Each structure stands twice: as structure tokens, then as C-alpha cells.
Length: 588
Image (cartoon, rainbow, N blue to C red):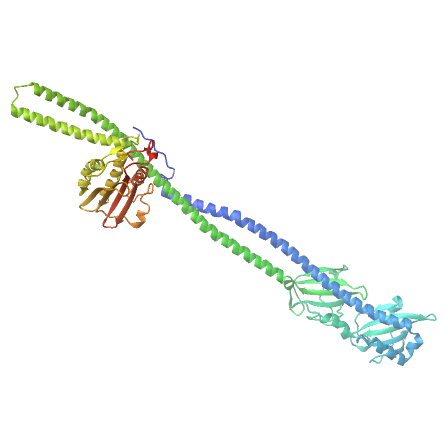
């Protein structure tokens, strides 16, 4: 008879192929995890980086522009006030009044009452000659007709000069306005107090490298920068790049004439209306974007830490998943092996049923033949008494052996067939005894003997005898196997009534190797076995447990390693009502 066994795709796979398969799964899982987690993280991080960099750059540009605009207003307001001071005096005083030395001194003192803004003041005619002068320098007889500022004020009526040395040989700025009387133009001129003007910019601090200063159209310093250079020095700036009204330029790192490296710088500038000077706000590029760079570095560190954390979690998770796959594959292999073994046992059951049927036919013929011989012997009156006695004895022995064979085949049929539960009155002593007789020969071959301790007054119970015998076969087989490695052993079978619980108990104890505690917890689980592959399916105890439970009973186990094991089965006198119509598979 051909038995169809489900094919396992994993059971027959070579070990080296499985290792490659698991390694491939490991790599694919990690790559998939990284793609699904790291790639979005990088995209988000890149987006944040770009957005924040642009935002921070715009803010820095706005900051520099605000600084330039702020200082531009301060400088222009300063000069506008000085020009207004002179224009107020020129338009409120006559030339004759201003030419009086005492009056001019009084006016000069009033001009400096709210602050030391003017260093000196003088009145000049249209020929560049002083008509009156108040100040610390000897300039009364100086001729200014050829100076640049004189020409400018005569042409424009108002002049704010560039920083120059002049007759006094120190850097200074001239503010001059004109007025006319009787068709004659005259000039009111004042020198700006240099320290008050320079303090507007030179005291400004912008970080460690920031500075603010003024240059004219020729790149000549009008104030002293914070780092290097002084008034009237030529500034090292590409003036041709500052043609717009205002703006921001990035200057790359260079090396100046004295060999000092000038780092990359950001320069914000604006041109004043009057005087025509350029206001410069300059700072090292690295310092300006220091906070931005720190934020970007922190974000990069966070991204790296996140990627490393994701990688570690991916590795741990993937290892766990691969281990789960391995465990599932091993369980599938074990189930396949058990299925094959179960199929073999089922085939053996079918074969046993066929053999039993085939043997029963010759046994029936032998019994019939014995009866015919016995009848013929009875008809023969001339047979010797001794021969007749021996003949009847032989026939009786043959009948006994035939009955014995019939009982063996009957037991085989009961275990091989699949049938519904048959609830009947059962003598448990006889039921257990039949199984002992069936297993006794196997036990003796292992050096194990059965000891019956039956209660002769044991009441009968209503149950399924064939299913109980299957349970006893499983328990006796396990008890015999528990003596493997021992030269001898014993199995004690005890039956007793339990009136308090309303049933009977069957105790089966052996002197085998015992069962460890961790095995006791799982011994009734399906397909759990400690026997080598091919010697156990892991189904015997599970089926036995289910049979006893469905018959309304319970099964307990006690064991000590090295001392033996005892199974105690309790069966009620009457089975549960739900048992009728249920069925169980036999012969497994």
C-alpha cells in the first residue's frame, strides 16, 4: 500500500544552502530596514540642513544690513547736525557780528556746550582769507583759496571734507557753509573734533573679529579700523567691487603685504550721501557663521547617532527575525519527521489490520479441522485409550494456541481500526491485564517485569475499553523504555477504588531513569519527545492525556530523576454525557 507523505521543502535542503539562504535574508532585511528608515531620515536631515542654512544665511545678511543701516543713520545724523549748527549760526548772525572775536568765541562756546564736537571755527571771505578765527591753531593768516574743500563749498554752499592733514599736519575733517551779504559770499568753517567723530565707529565691538570703519572713494581710511591700519592709510579692499549703493560681499582668504594671512571675510557696505564715504562692516566669515556651523555639526552628529542606532536596532531585530525563521524551519523539519513517522505508524496499523484478518481465516480452518478430527475420534470405538487420550490432549493444545492467536489478532484489530467510542461496562483489571500480556514479552526482553497489584473488588466502570488500552500501551511502552541502559527493572500496576471522588485509580510506576523537571512541564505537549528521531513521535502521551480527559478522568505524573516515575489515572464510574458520538484515532 502506497502512503502519500507531504513533501518538505526545508527538510531536504542542504545545510550549506540554508546558511547561504539565512545570510542572504540577513543582508536583505538589514538593507530593507536601512532603506525604509535611514533614507527618509537622510532626506529629512538634508531638507532641514538646507532650510536652516538658507534661513541662517538670510538672518546673517539681515543682521549685517541692519548694522550698516544703523551706523549709516548715526554718521549721517552726526554730520547733518553739525551742518545744521553752522547754518543756524551763519543765517542768524551777520558777517559783522561774526568778525568780532569775542562774539565768535561766545558762539564757539555755545556750539560745544552740549558736547565737544568742534575743535575750532573760522569766518573766511570769498578769497580764502580768515576774517576771524577761534581755535588752538595759528591759522589766521593762512590762505585756503586753493584747498579742495574751499573750492567745493564755494561751488555747493555746503561742504563736508574728506579726512586730510592741511596746515595743522594732523588728520581732520572740515564742515563749511556759505552765506551772502550785499552780494558778497563768505564762509563759516569749523573743524570736527576728531575724537568725538571717531568714537562713533571705533568703539563698536562685533564679536572677536568684527570692525566698522569709513573709507572715501579712493579707499583712504577716514577712521581707524579695529584691526590694522590707521587714518589716511590705503585700505586693502577691492574698491571696484563696491559700486552699488549698498550690498554684501564675500572676500576670499588672502595674504597681505607683510605675509599675514587674512581669513575669508564677509563685508557689508553702504555709501553715505554726504560726505561721499563708504561705511564698512566687516567680520570673519567663520565667526559670522559659527553658530550656524555648530548647529549643522550638531545636526550631523544627531544624524550619525540616529543612523548608528538604527543600524544597531536593525542588526538586533534582523538577528531575532532570522533566529525566528530558523526556529520555524527546525519546527517544520521536526513536524515533517514526525509526520513521516506517524505515516509509518499508520501504515503499520493498516498492515497489522490486514495481517490480523489474514491470520483469522487459517485459524478458523484449524479450529474447524480440530473439531472434525475430534468428531471422527469420537466415532471410532476401537481406538486405544492411551492414543485417544494423547489425541484429545493434542487437539486441546491446538485449540488453546488457536484461541491465543485469535486473542492477539483481536487486540491488533482493536488498535488498528478507527471507530467511534463504545461505552460499556469495563472490568479494568481485565482491561489492564490484557495489555500487560501483550507487552510482557517486550518487557522481558529488556529485563523488566510487571507486578500486578489489582483490587479484586474493583467496581466496573462505564468507559471505552479500546481507548483505555491504547493509553496503557503508551504508558507501558514509555515505562519499558525508561529502563534503557539498566540490566533489569520493574513496573508496578495498581488498581484501587476511590469512593470519595466516585471513580477508580490506576497507578503505573516504574524503576526507570525518571523525568527531569523541565521535561515534566511539557511532556503532554503534542510532538514533544526526548527520544531520538525514529524512536518516538511525541504523540503518545498527548493522545493519552486527551483520551483520559475526554473520558471524564484525569492523569497525573510524579517523577524523581534516577528513581523512577509514577502515572496515576483517575476514571469516573460514569463518563460525561458529551462522550457519546465522539471518535479518536487509534494505532498512533
